[in-house]
Amino acid sequence: MAGRYDRNPFAEEEEVNPFAPGSVPAATNSRLSPLPHEPADFYDRNASVDIPLDSTADIKKKEKELQAKEAELRKREQEVRRKEEAASRAGIVLEEKNWPPFFPIIHHDIANEIPIHLQKLQYVAFTTYLGLVLCLLWNIIATTTAWIKGEDAKIWFLALIYFIAGVPGGYVLWYRPLYRAFRTESAFKFSWFFLFYLLHIGFSIFAAVAPPIVFRGKSLAGILPAVDLIGKHALVGIFYFIGFGLFCLESVLSIWVIQQVYMYFRGSGKAAEMKKEAARGALRAAI
Image 1 (cartoon, rainbow, N blue to C red):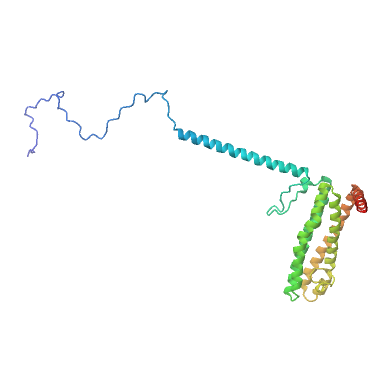
Image 2: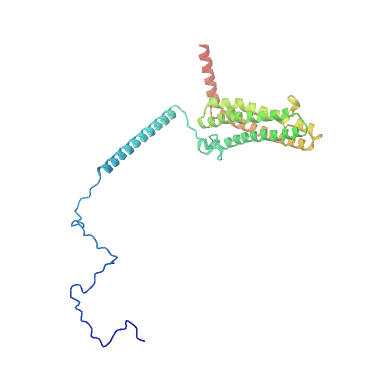
């Protein structure tokens, strides 16, 4: 059955003029909107660009601030340089802490500050200082074992006092004076070193023997308390014998150091210089 809207092939077609007005329907649903007209000077390369006056003022203000900061930094740098020059003229050396490397607390640079012919001796002196630290630390360990085995607690507190006083005292009283004496060739520093290094050697020998003077000598890990304790507590006695060996080694090495320093002191003419200074001081006192 033919459809309702089937076209009749025998019907005459109506002629349509495509150029007649209104023959083509207007596009009512067009999605593209017409582009706006471009201004006449859109492609004018010689056209001037307006820059806001506020932005240029801000740039000039920032430039002035930077110049002021630069002038202030220059002034501070000159002030620091002036202070360093004044300190160097006065003989003051600014020392930067660099030892130990993991927690710097002192300035120590033998390779760059001590003359080459004295560096070996300075290193050995530094070894005796580290040896003192080791001896006093081991002394605390030995007295701790003695305290655990029933000895008086006072020996442990005395050993702790030896360590707290001896470690910084050794550095300030004799090691640093020797370091500065080698660096500046100061006769006064040499004399200061000799005085307190002799006390250091005396203490090391006394600790190695540990006579029964203070709390029967057991506050120091020496030979006498080691012999006394080896029969009661073998482990405590062994710890004290190790301490005795450490103090003996410290004493022998320290005696060698003071001999070498004294030989250099006399050979360099510092002894004669010190005698002259002493004679001048006595003469001034007499006048």
